Length: 373
Ligand SMILES: Cc1ncc(COP(=O)(O)O)c(C=O)c1O
Image 1 (cartoon, rainbow, N blue to C red):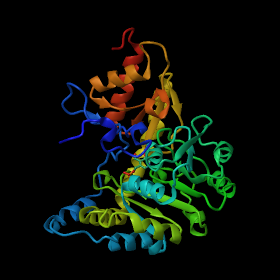
Image 2 (cartoon, rainbow, N blue to C red):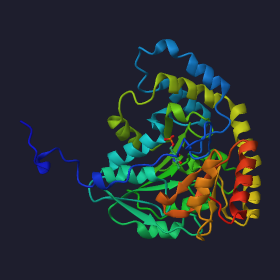
Image 3 (cartoon, rainbow, N blue to C red):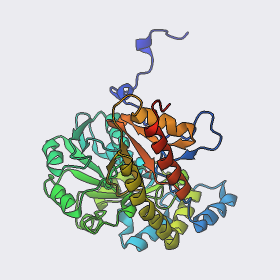
């Protein structure tokens, strides 16, 4: 006999049911057969042909378990970035690396600190470990180092910064990162999420790898999902202090990166031509989009990533939510970011030239219509 008393059923740990699930970028638009997905900051150029070939070449190995240490990829990363292989953590996307860091370091009642508009994955993992998420106010959609430091207390274990950030696209300079790190107790880990770092060529910027080399409490993460265009294969990695990597590697799933993912990532890393093309594309169209969208009278947050954040008025008929719908009807799927506390904004991934022009044309039409819908 089953017990029908709800209180007697299996109960998730406290706090789990209060976690708002991660909302991925939409991939479909009602009534549009082949919409353009500009909602997930994927690489609009696809991926390296060499990575594709490497992926395809693994087809005969489907019956095999992957190398749990991802030795080839580990060695390739170590060589490419001149890093110690034992300090690397490989993950099923960097999302898994964040989850592992949270799982390894957080006890109930501990806290993590992140920016007001910080990437959602950090908080989910922290809450799953019954930790508290402390949000530091940002200035002009940009991390404020003093506000971050003011949130640190005796229970802080991890500080997360995406640099450049998602969904704002802004970054803080190497000097600001150093000041933040200098202000942290030695027991607090600073996680520098470099998912978009490769798109930022500003001379004042660094992904933090240089300071991480000599620090006991900095973790720098990178992903193959953005510049390398391998989001489907879920390969992320971190450069961590050896003791952190050693602890995290104890609890990660033994086969968390696939044979196909490892092989494609090794090939992608070597394809500097594709990387350069991807960066050049973003550098060509990011200022163009900013100028055109700004020219329409919409608010543009300066971006150092492969997307732009656009602010809309709250006037009925002109809102971000209505613009999102208007664009979707024209086959352009962009990202509403109300769940990040930015209900008046849309995040738009930089597309191919035709997509970017279509976005600007559609936004122009949207703003010029008396009743845009
Ligand atoms: C700031 C940031 N960090 C990490 C990720 C996740 O990357 P991955 O695909 O490696 O899990 C994303 C993905 O959108 C992101 O925006």
